[in-house]
Image 1: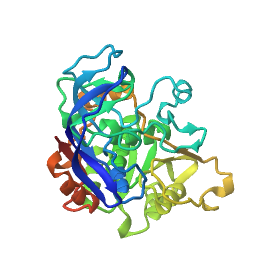
Image 2: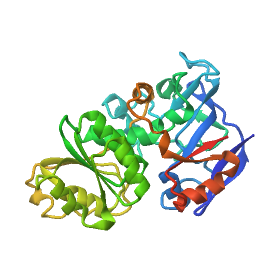
Image 3: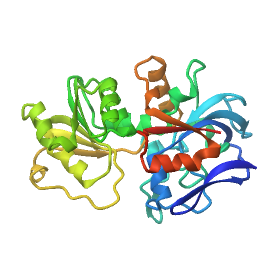
Image 4: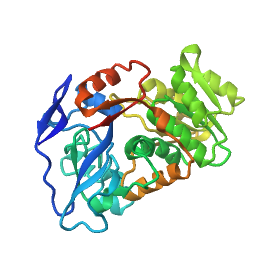
Length: 355
């Protein structure tokens, strides 16, 4: 048996015991050494995103290989690894057409928006002592010895998602980029835009600590949306030109619309938000459909090569995301950690959980 954070019903995720997972020929069993609580987990807790009762929550694992499936090659027990929040199979139609994050999205019963997100969604997740990783040879990426758990903790989801906002928006050298909402994903989008070559990056939020971290990660300017209209401020900062790329990292009508309104003609809105209601595209901001604007969405890229690339960025000291871990809890206190994180107390940004 093992300890795990289990979804019981809306409003209740509790620490309980359940069997250590069995693994198949292509799977691996990880002994979790560090994981996190994500904003998506809070949506699950509140009943805003439906999952099965009894499911173990969590999708950001760092751990040690405890056991390998009989068909798994190229890995060894005792090896320290990470796995992405998105775990593609490597052989689906989505994978073979170059969109591995959408593995599992298309079904005979209709479209499933969450694609290849399985941990803590359709299979047991990482807020536990052990985790079964499906398709281990596609999804396990060894952690370089010189890197700590906390250095790579953001790779499985937050870093991969944030960077993808800049990548999907096709940020170019010399671009001006606005990032709306500086939670963990938005902060990683700031860092990703800088790595892609943006020379002016404008971060929009209201929490002083987040504005400060954004500046440390590469934001040239920060805008407090409670101090005035952020659209007006961004247009003033760009001398009325607008931004080349606007990254929306919250998932609300207000931030989506503001991101659209600050685009230059031909600019790109790169959406990372998860929306819970229909969006309205304002006629003027969309230039009646004649402004050559681009709107692109992205689900967190996964797979072992994506994880390897992100860890290479960290190893090369191009980015340090450790300051984003503001709180640490043992697994035994995860219910307390959820209460803190869900209510955003004490300046919490990311919580590290260690079994």
